[in-house]
Amino acid sequence: MRDTNFLIENNARHMWHPMAHPAEMQAVPPKVITAGEGVHVTDVEGQKTLDAVGGLWNVNLGYSCQPVKDAIRDQLAELPYYSAFRGTSTGPAIELSYELRQWFEEDGLTRSFFTSGGSDSVETALRLARQYHKIRGDRDRTKFLSLKKGYHGTHFGGASVNGNANFRRNYEPMLAGCFQIACPHIYRNPFGETDPAKLALLCAAALEDEIAFQGPDTIAAFIMEPVLGAGGVIPPHESFMPLVRDICDRNGILLIADEVITAFGRTGAWTGSRLWNVRPDLMCTAKAITNGYYPFGAVMISEKVVETFENNDDAFGNIGHGYTYSAHPVGAAAALAALAETKRLNVADNAAVRGDELLAGCKDLMSRHEGVGDVRGKGLMVCLELVADRANKTAVAKSVMADVFEKTYEAGVMVRVSGNNVILSPPLILTAENVSTIVTALDHGLSAAD
Ligand SMILES: Cc1ncc(COP(=O)(O)O)c(C=O)c1O
Image 1 (cartoon, rainbow, N blue to C red):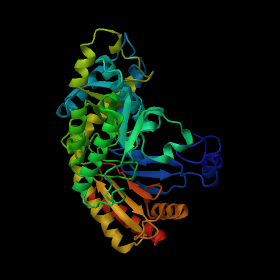
Image 2 (image 1 turned 135 degrees about the vertical axis):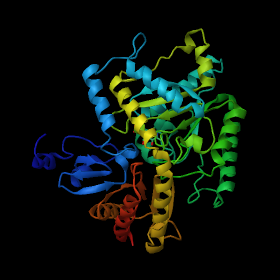
Image 3 (image 1 turned 90 degrees about the vertical axis):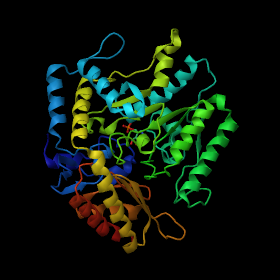
Image 4 (image 1 turned 60 degrees about the vertical axis):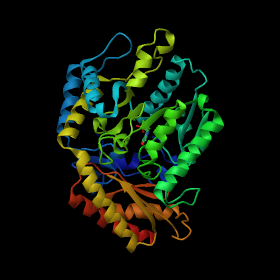
């Protein structure tokens, strides 16, 4: 690699960064991360920080997970690529599909469709949902429903079911036939409701109302994150996803759980669906499936959908969808090793315990920092929403959010700032001491918003 001066001089000059304004990246160049170890990363200036972002909700096992590194190296040496398109397969892909079937047995999911990441997984699930209805002769069922504030990646399908204008506005018009309903967000909801169980009922009623309005026989699927992540970490009341499951069943609508963040332990349960005692029809996974070391994802498919496809004997059952890198053998080998480590370290239990500590620590910060309007979370997904004044919940200036980020970074912790939210999604191998480090650094950083 070229030297440090080269990296600093050329930073953001010749590449456009995802989710950023190119001019802003040139004016305020991003941190250049050059090394990672355990739960820490080091930047090009030599500053070491605790990575409370966990890469991007994906490095659940930290940066030193040797079994995953070894699996990638060994697979590269043996067979660096072969396709899984009709007619060929590879050993790691077959083995991974077997392992995932055991992993997701409790969720009732028995088949995998492999992808290159979260957006691919969402796109795949949306397509398979439409196809499921076509196979059954329900050819009008093409629409998708979802939650406002939901995030489902950035392919046109995923962006169309997305519930945040920031990811839609510049790319409209979106896919036709996608509609969002109010999400069960206690801090900001259109009903002015603060009781979580009542709010769940109101949002479920809004869903029923929308279904009746659209016509149940026109809707293919409802997609939701069990705990909303990128939209600002919004854990619904425990009754909400079961209510949605029931409404979907009564109306012949498939339920897609977008677990790109929540699968593999982040909420403190092995899946978000399991957390709420729900069995989805399709589940999108990615991110932590390889501990972030290789771009990979899997859509998990329930028996109900499996039977419809596998018993079909005409062209409607043919899957006309897939990626060159679907079931990539190196990604599959990485996933096999990551799953084994994820299970061995029992990171779901650790996420639950450390998550409670982190949430309590962040709530405590509210008493010292007037600028923190709300703190919410589940497991190791936590959000601090900053406001200019608590009574009116008005937005803080962008520059304040940037200052909070910088000051927290100076104090030794990397956080993610998105709109008014400071989002925490650290590796699931976090220790109690790491939790204190995060809270102490935030205490310092939040002084920028006081
Ligand atoms: C719930 C959810 N779905 C889909 C995606 C898209 O995943 P990717 O960025 O890997 O395409 C994300 C990414 O954060 C996500 O959080």
